Image (cartoon, rainbow, N blue to C red; front, side, top):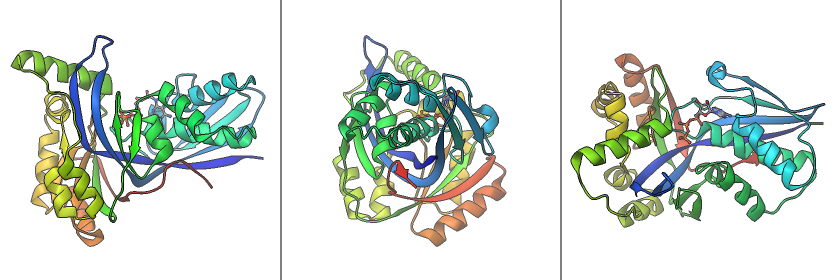
Length: 299
Ligand code: ATP
C-alpha cells in the first residue's frame, strides 16, 4: 500500500521584511500564491526511514535526515508514538533552492501522506502546528491557494482570489541560499543605516488578488529581498529585463530567489514571454504555471 500527495510551489507576490529580531529571524508580511508546479511525494511502508528522489534537480536534494520530508515523517511519528518506518519517494518538479518553497512542499506532502498511510487522522490544526515547527513556508504548502503569512511567515490567513494569474518562471544557473539572502538584506540595511519599517501587507495588493485583475496585481507586487538577491546574483537583473522586454506585466525575484517570476495577462501572453525568455540566454530553463492551486492533496 502506498499514498501519493501532490503539493505545489509558491510565488511571493509580496514579501515585506522587517528588521532582524533578537532571535535572528525577521518578521515578515508574506503574501503567498500557490502555482501549478508540483512535487509528488509517495510514502510506502518500509523497514526504516528511506528517501529517494527523481527529477531534473534530484542530485541537489539531500537524501538523509535533513530532508524536510524526512523531518516531517519523524515529527509526525514522534508526536503519535510510532517509528517512522517509511520509504518516501519525491518526484521533484519544483526547482531546488529556487525560492519556490520546494523543500517546504515536500515537508507538507510527506506529513499529509504519512498521516494518511498511518491512519492517524490528525486535525488540520495539528498538522499546521507540525508544519510551523518544520519551517516558515511549510504551513502554506499545506494550505495552498493564496494566503497572508505573518510572524516568520507561518501564521496564515487565507485570502480570496478573483481569478487565475498566469506566470512564467525563469530558473537560474545556480541556487541561492535563503539564509545568505537574509544576511545580505541585513548587511544592506546596515550599510544604508536606515530604519526598517514594520512589515505590513499592502491593501492594494490584497484588492488586486481579490479582483483577479493581472494589471492591478502587476503594479502592487513587491519583494524586499530582491535587492539582496540581486546583490548576491547581479545577472538576475538581465533575466528580469529580458522578461519585461518580452511583454511581462511585471517581473520580480521569487522569494529569496534566484528564480525570477513574470506575470502575464493571460495564458497566451505567458507562452510568448516564456519563449522569449528561453531564447534570451539569461536563464537555465523556463516554466509556465498559473495560480492559485490547492495545497497538499492526496491523489
Ligand atoms: P524557500 O522558497 O522556502 O526559501 P527554496 O525553494 O529556495 O526554499 P528549497 O528547494 O526548499 O529552497 O531548498 C533549499 C535547501 O533545502 C536545499 O538546498 C536542500 O539542501 C535543502 N532541502 C531539504 N529538503 C529538501 C527537499 N525535500 N527538497 C529540496 N531541498 C531540500
